Amino acid sequence: MQLTFFADRLRRLVNDETGSITYRPHFLAEREAQRLFDRLRAEVEWHSGRRWMYEREVDVPRLTSHFRVEEGIPESLQAVLVRVREAEGVPFNSIGLNLYRDEKDSVAPHNDHLNEVAAGQPITLLSLGATRLMTIRSKARPRRVLDVELEPGSLLTMSYATQLHYDHGIPKQRRKVGPRMSVVFRVRP
Ligand SMILES: O=C(O)CCC(=O)C(=O)O
Image (cartoon, rainbow, N blue to C red; front, side):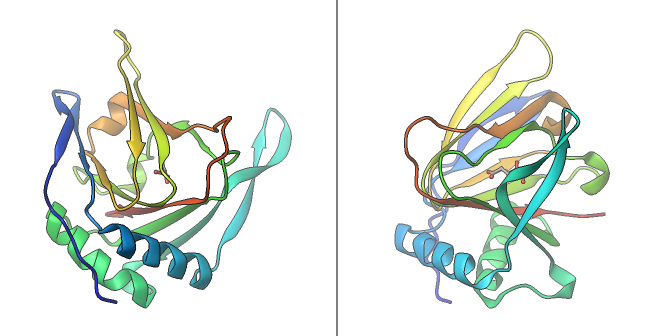
């Protein structure tokens, strides 16, 4: 798959002793982001999970999928993996996918489990489809809240340290929102 990349306009949202969070809009051109979204939506085996909440089993409010790079990844992700590795200078070896079907899908505020990320390595999210709000909140006071509109084709990178200091989540929305996907690059130990 031919992809066009724009590596400009990096925004530093956090850059201090709590770690670094950067946002890079238009990493993928709009048309390429849409094409990748369409291919992944059609080709990937999406799973709907269940989880326990307040003593009740409920649906995980989004669809997910996961690939270990060493076991093979879909052809549509190969070029993008190479470019994200290059852009971030990180040997990502795991790709998680989240599909938010509409405004009712979400992910609750959380930090990545640090035993599932190689020490010191960041997490990079590529957004595709509809723009969704991500809320990033510091765990400690004084509370710091960052609301980031994750646009299609953008990359958000959170350093390892930020997982100790911040929670991130994609809240449900009241207004109608189309489907959105995130492609999450990690280095698994
Ligand atoms: O969809 C996103 O941008 C966030 C995904 C996420 O937080 C996760 O997979 O742990």
